[in-house]
Length: 113
Length: 114
Image (cartoon, rainbow over all chains, first blue to last red; front, side, top):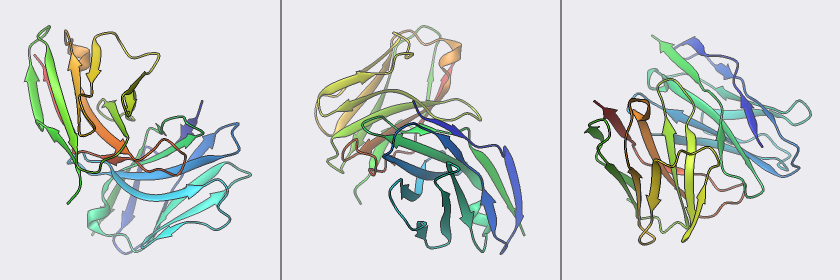
């Protein structure tokens, strides 16, 4: 079974600064997927970025990038040039084989002007 | 736009009174999921359908049931809601269950139990 650990309950960042949200995972599978979702106060889960276990390069999507360290089993999300609209809950998640997506407990990000 | 739609956005029910939450999708995805998310917690998978094949999580209470009459619709039935069932219920879809398939979520239904 997958286990996802997000050790930061909350993070603060100033507008236009970069922020890193931590995530570690625990799996014995060789093939797995790693996902980050954003959940604003409205409740909808919004997909941000994906990293496959066999991907050699770190994933990037606009202002979002992953610092994927396979040996350490970590996949930290980096948000560059933070915006006020980035304030939300951020969830790291993983699946493997035909197992369904397992989520971490999330990190609440607050962006201040 | 293709999407996952959940109705209603807010649902209030009485203790012990059966309630049904609905989800529809225009993505034509094979897999539909129901997650329960309590305040400040991670979403917890209740069950999912792979096409017509129902897959229940081992720790999902018997009080929770689901129906998928066709590809587009999926329902969550709570037979006798308790106070502990108050939560956000999220419906999600994916094309398949392989590791690179992202989930598309609806906006959720916030259930209150009085």
